[in-house]
Amino acid sequence: MEISIGKWLRATVLLVALCWDVSSYAQQLTITKYDIDKVPVKWNDMEAQLTIDAEYPEGSSPAARTLHRWLCELFTAREFQGQFSTSKQLMERVEADFMETNSVEMMKRVAEEGTEEGNWYFNYRVKKEYESSRIVSYTYSWDAFQVGNATSNANIIDVTVAKTDGRILGWEMFTSVRQLKKLLDKQLVEKYGEDGADLYLKGTPPMPRAPLFLKDGVRFDFGDYTIYVPHVYEETGEYPCAFLRYADIKHLLTDEAKALLGLSQQAPSLNEPEPASDPQVNAELFRVYLKSWDDLHNLRQNDDFVYEYTPNVDYYGTKMAKEKVQQSKVAFLQKTPDYEQVSYRLKATKTDDRHVRCDFQKRTVTQGKTRVYPSYLIYVTEDNGLSWQIERESDLVTDKNLQKQRAQAKGKAK
Image (cartoon, rainbow, N blue to C red; front, side, top):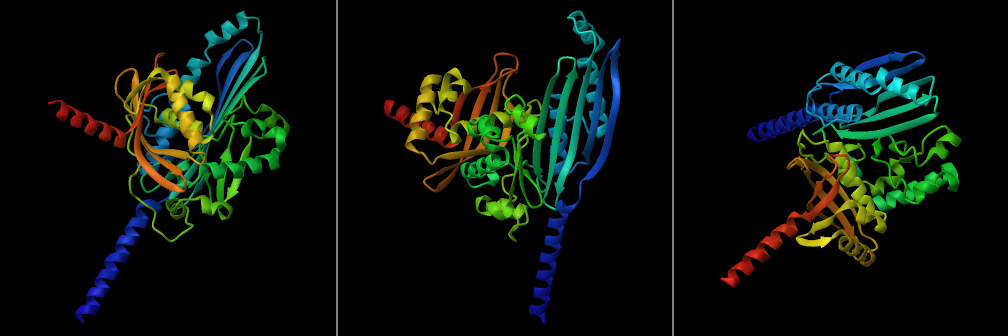
């Protein structure tokens, strides 16, 4: 009897724990619908119209907090300070920014330049694309056009967030980004033809900013590269996109990705959640920089390495000119033709007014072997944050070995 009661108690505790774990992230996000359609700025025959159609996530869950920051930085192009707790506060800020940017004074200047009339149209959309018990996926889109000088721009930016800990799911969910790109290349050519996909295949743009994980597969949107692919939009009425079914790419998904997407019975990993970045830093901006840095390696964009670095670089403990860094990168990639890397779990920290340190995990694949290095890049700006370059590149393993070598050398000198 004691044995059976013990088994019953253990089973009960296990069941309660399992239910508690599932309920901790199974709750659906609370969504607030926010609509704006107005002409807040008007002067003579000119007007600027603002439209917002947003499904805004409310609440303080890990996923909601991540989405708050993501949307705030996209809507306002400002570093997130944690000041927007509701959709109303954020949208009021967007309207205020719109009034300031599209002011009557600006319209007067346009009129003085010879444009007698003109209308500005700015449209923002935020849509929840998919939500399960473990992930939630959102799309932010923005387009603007001006009647008068026929200019237009557009952005389509995707994000998928793990509800367990609020971290953004990116390219680390795939075992090989290079193999994934081959599938995307093939589908884009089939969909748009060689001419429609030519700029993409040449590496401009190399990959979308982020994958969008949905119910049956992954969508890849290329809409934030307006100046590169306008001919595709003009001919098809849509920005380049691709969709790969999970059934066709399951072999390219990591075990954690399969668990989070419900493709396996294994519990999703909760280890090493994405650390919180410095609230003074625009984490999304440096996530884009990090993605670009990965692309240089994975797509063998050898000529562009020199643009990523400052004239003099601290490169794994050695001071060298950026041209030497480029030569080192090219030599390494030629020696390891199958090399690829994915950087993830970013933590961006402002160290002073000009420097931001980005700590992250760098997963590399060479000759079928996968390794993960705790790495970092230190970025510096010379134009008050308008652009950033790498001043130092290293990883914690290298730093520890160099420190040990210096200590040994110092001991021998004594």
